Structures are given as structure tokens and as C-alpha cells.
Length: 203
Ligand code: IMP
Image (cartoon, rainbow, N blue to C red; front, side):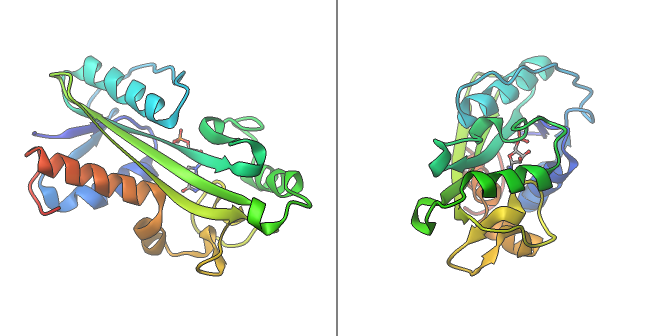
């Protein structure tokens, strides 16, 4: 495989995937860099379906291997919300400070053992011959009682890690990458690509 087109406009995600595939000798390019301008409707019912929809659309538009991810926060006490609607929840333009404050409010009075939540990341890689590889991983924690930390993004300041005694936004980028849903799912995808003989490296 000569290169992988990653179906995202998000520079942060692109950097993460480049870092993880760095030693494999296969460059990762964005849709923009590949000159692909697909208008993709993410109307799947699950993270995995949405990742596949995006990767398939870019593979079809380019005729090359394409990878995509879909991720979000699942809160058990809210029946799994915001889930696949994580970025759109309460409106795309609403600040995460407001969204995080609303999560804390919605869980007011909910005891610690019922505040469980997880970030989920699903990744799909689609090849021109129709082959699909997928990986999905989670990052477990609870919804905290306040916002803390300056790192990360989105819901990280309200996502408390009981085992570590800190919030996700208090982890360094390297620490988060080691244990996060996206870091783990990307490494699992890398291993699958190596096992399929598409990339060099050790699993
Ligand atoms: P996506 O870009 O469509 O995958 O949407 C992911 C959304 O889920 C983001 O906009 C955030 O709201 C949330 N999210 C996913 N991963 C994380 C994370 O690592 N930290 C905080 N929020 C996240």
C-alpha cells in the first residue's frame, strides 16, 4: 500500500494517526491533501457504521485505500447519550464548557457507581477490492462533579479516571494516547494492517 487517505478534516486526529503509523513507511494523507472533496452524510446508527460510511465514501471517490474514525462519549445514566451525537449534542456551536456543565447537572444526585461512562472509537479501513478492516476500543471512566484540566478537548475536563485519581484533561497528550479509545483503536488497526501485509512493522 502506497499511502492511506484518512477521512477527516480534523488536524488533531491526523497528527495522532501519523504518529502511530510513523514507523511503518506508509504516509497518511488527509482528504484535502489527496484532492478528495466528498460530501459525506454520517447517518449510521453506530460508531462502527459511521466510520465505515466515511471510509467507504473516500475509498470510492479516490480509488485508493481509505481510513476513517468515529468517536464519542457514552454515559450509562443517560441511556448511552450523547453517543454518536457527541459533537452535535446541545448544538454543534455550543461550547464544551456549557455541554460539560449540563452533563454534571443531568447527573446531579446520581451516585458514583452509576456515573460510569466511556469514550468509544471505531476505525474502519476500506480497500478498493472491497476488503474492510475495523477496530473499536473504549476508554472507561465516570462523569465527575466538576471540570478540571487544561489538556485534551471536548468532554475531557469532565471525564474522571477513578484508577488514576484525575480527570482526562489533566493527562499529558502522551499519557492519554497510551490509554485512550483512539490511541488503542489506532494501534489495533495498525496491527491488523501489518498482519495483512499492508504495512511493515511488528505487531
Ligand atoms: P467525531 O469527530 O465525529 O468522531 O466526534 C467525536 C466527538 O466525540 C467529539 O467532537 C467530542 O465531542 C467527543 N470526543 C471523542 N473523543 C474524545 C476525547 O478523546 N475527548 C473528549 N471528547 C471526545
